[in-house]
Length: 74
Image 1: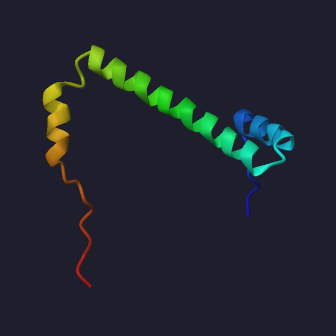
Image 2: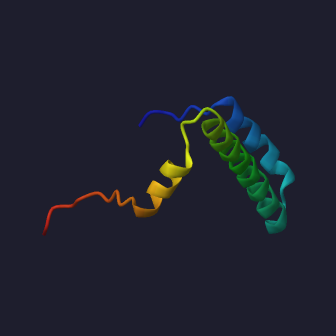
Image 3: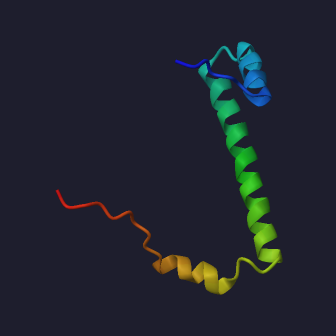
């Protein structure tokens, strides 16, 4: 089995974990990380909207989108 190599962000989070001693603190950290990624997603959506990649027509097309993976019958 090969050893796992952690990147700088992962190592930093591991160091920070020593400061979290309650379930509430862990919950708050999870929320902060979730908020960070939600903000990044919003920024990307705004960018796509501004450059015309995302339009009203495309968003409305998502309403009827069905992209399911076909599986063979058993």
